[in-house]
Image 1: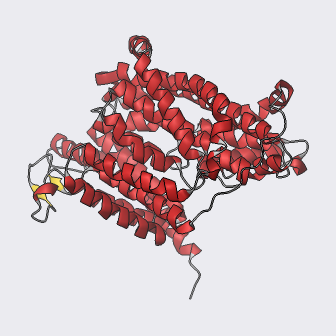
Image 2: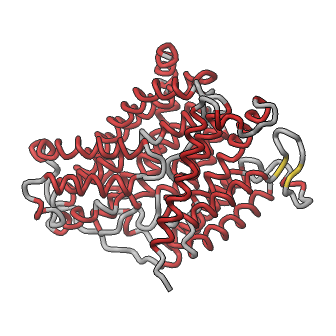
Image 3: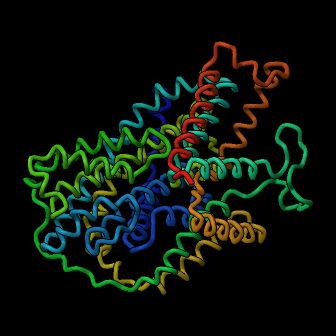
Length: 493
């Protein structure tokens, strides 16, 4: 693998890769800085662009959108107390107070530096961790892969949105959707309802844009947000002494965010709140937090950006996305012919390492672009939503159509968009459904291989000396525990 790492380093040093990462970072910051618009929306809308680029260019472009969007959400959080992304919620606690004190530039600077440091450190950790984890995963056979995928689906579905039963229902629905089309093992049509367009299955891109971007657009429209007056960028830039004072907090939050990023299903919001709480508890003056403490901004931003890199570990080694954004990234990998999982590193290891190394380079670009463009992005909060919404809708429909140039994809986009709006109104999290849809085919294929290996005894490996037996046996009590927990939370009578 060290040869693949060296080759990947050389592959990452491409001019077009750096150029597209710059566009991705700028685009992510642009959307994140708009009140009410999210990184998830940016990823879903810009996803089709990556399909027309080389994988070493297209995937880093999306990673740039990811990184830029997370930081961009801190700009309206600091300036007008309206987090652009969920990850910036903790940033509002002290960021807006600093703006009211005329120190908004200091808050924006520490948010940028903390974001870059946390992101870079976690990316390096990811590259180092990929080696041993990928080696372990390569030892997996079909039974182990099936069991681990099943266990991951159960855990994520059971913990999503605090409603285990709803998460499990959505997961099962997603699995059913993945069965629509032609059976990959037997070649038999399933659940096509006589529609020729469904013989090849449900298209992934219209589903992702529909369930993720359309509900976000609907929320912005229903809020009917008005332009907010931008708080004046008063005060000086961040000093080196202030950064040194925050450095221990930044390191602590980076460790917290990195640890959370490895675990699928937690994400930036949890990391930011935990990093903020840890900083407040460790402070000699905890009473200053929430009143305009610069360390509070540093803690939240370092933690939420440190999640970005480690989420790639389960994504690349097992094909398990850790959150909604990495679910979109998984769709990009699949569309590029890079199917994450045990065989990815043996078949296309150099390409994978090139993408991971590009992530580190992206942070250097992130620092330069962010520092120079903060004044520009901070003024985006005054743009009228009525101007932006039609453009976003246009990009959504264009993106869903151009990949296959099939009008049926637009029907799917609208259908899943309506479904996403209804699901959100009913408080159903669509993430388990999307994960069930994406992980269903490899899980079904691994199960089919297991049946063949055991001469028709599908559950024969339960009693064998395999890791799969442990994962399957763990899935059963997980389901029972979360259902029991849900039943206890329902009041009697």
